[in-house]
Amino acid sequence: MSDPQPALRRSIGLIPLVMYGVGVTVGAGIYVLVGITAGQAGAFAPLSFLLAALIAAPSAFSFAELSARMPRSAGEALFVQEAFGSLRLSQFVGLAVVFVGVISSATVTNGAAGYISEFLNLPGWLIKLLFVSTLGAIAIWGVVQSVTVTVVLTVIETSGLLLIICVGLYNIGSPDVLHWPAWSAPLHGLGPTAVMTGILTGTLVAFFAFIGFEDLVNMAEEVRDPERVMPRAIAWTLIVTTALYLIVVVIAINVVPPTELAASPAPLALVFERATGISAASFAGIAVLATVSTVLVQIVMASRVLYGMAGSGGLPVLFGRIHRRTQTPVIATCVVIAIVLVLALAFPLTGLARTTTFLALCIFTIVNLALWRIKLHDKSEPSHFTVPIWVPVTGALLSAAILIFEVAQLAG
Image (cartoon, rainbow, N blue to C red; front, side, top):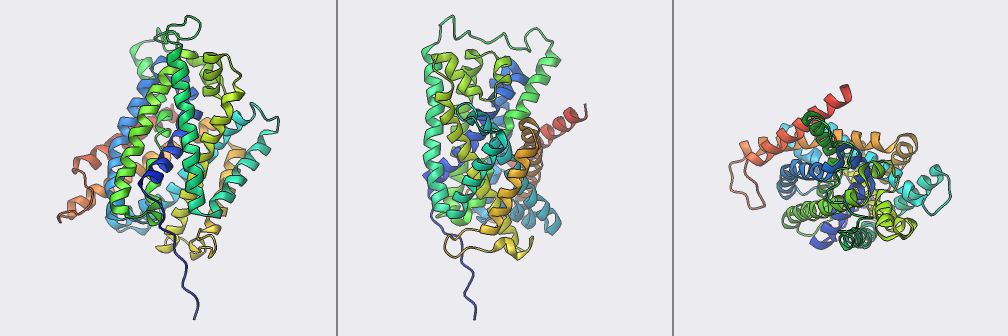
């Protein structure tokens, strides 16, 4: 008789899970994409981030209820299977979640390479190879180790953002640093249509900055008391990241003109240098650590989706094998690492970010519709976190609307 297949380890509580969510979200959004968003929206970049947060909020609460209803790995695929009874649609959503994770990791890896090159003179391809391989090894090592590393890095990356806020506020009123507001932005002087187009295009990029809360649902099988902890962690992740983003982006566009931010491979390092006169390399180390947490979390998340889909029959059982010593899905993790490396080496940052946003919006639309359908048919009194039925409807409509705008932008 063969030994039973080992299971994932339930070892994560609320605070580590929130820091895990903040870590993946903050590292991707503000450290890497603030320059691109400023280049699109100019002085209105804070509005782009605010709109992105409002678009993400209903979906976040839908994910919160679904994670309390069905706390399992491969959450999105499970939600869709439960709502629509379609294995094909469930497989599509699950694989789309994996692609969001790996493309997001590749996007942030490219951003990390820009920061690392500030103080390490190595070829870009070598930097990316070493970066992803090291994080993949940590992910294989174990979930406790991965979460511990993420928590430590989250403290560091959040401290980096607080440092930017402090030096920016300290220099308010200095004629050489801050000019409130930053009307030197490229959208100044344009008509309302051009301004709105710039804001919405910036929102598409900024939306990437809020991708992260949905990753938490795929950690449910490694969370203690997931029915209670998961919804709280998702809500706090969105609240904390939104507050940090809005403050930092206002500081950034008033320290450095948006056109300069857009041209910099290390935008917040440039903000730090301009505000303090200290070399950008001094801040680049913090930015690198911020991107580390994002890539690590996405690798862990994507591998758990593959694991969960294998367990439900959506993928070959090979992806569901757990290593007995590390209690991690090693084969699934190695596949994720390989795909991240290929994408990071082959594609530019902006294209990867927009692809991630496109896929995420598709997932959010379908998952919101899944909750709407489940709530229509489930008339029982819930014993877990729940939201009114208009929340998933709003989430689906907002996600679909911005998705249509994205398609129109690409077609134009």
